[in-house]
Image (cartoon, rainbow, N blue to C red; front, side, top):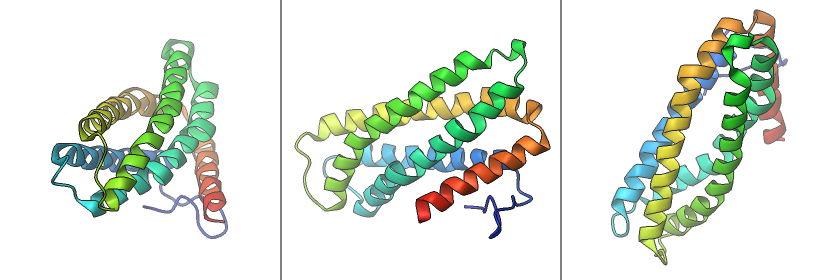
Length: 177
């Protein structure tokens, strides 16, 4: 993953929105991994893939949501024009973030079981849960990519993008301390 800020906290030349877009690509890869896991249940399970997916759900997804909730969304709300109609969209996406993180806890538990080579009590239910999550998350990412990011690119100033980069870097320094 590219750096958002240098060692002094100054934003790198790379735009923070580009970083968010790259995270969306990585999240789509996570969805693909969850789909492979669901397709392989109950017998054909890649334990390492389960561990990687579990780590992403536990660490990367909440960090990305934090970047959007505390960084991107407030900036967009401040800069949006009335005809952007963004407030309702951002409220819905924020609700989905909370729902996804709550749902992730159950998935993490099942993925941990699989990563340790143990059998699931109800593999059909876990497969159903995995599918529900990755289908919803793919739709969520598409919504952000096709509605939110274009508005952000059109409305945010260079100063806003620098602020967003610093906010994102701060989130990473908090998580690594």
